Length: 90
Image (cartoon, rainbow, N blue to C red; front, side, top):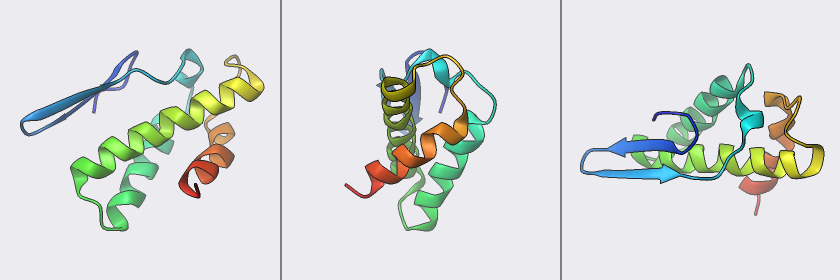
């Protein structure tokens, strides 16, 4: 997993580029939240590759929802938590 504008996920013979997300994600704690999201999916039985793909997608989708509601400037990792919960429970 390589975070950035166009997050790159590489797994064995496959790779994906996530184009969602926004500049507000360049703030302290975002990587910690991403790591926690991924490892929680592994703990629920997903493979490392699946958890990385789904976790990164969930993280960036939640950030986009947070930006839509509150704007990108001043975004904090904790702002994503309600949106992660909302997305997981869909």
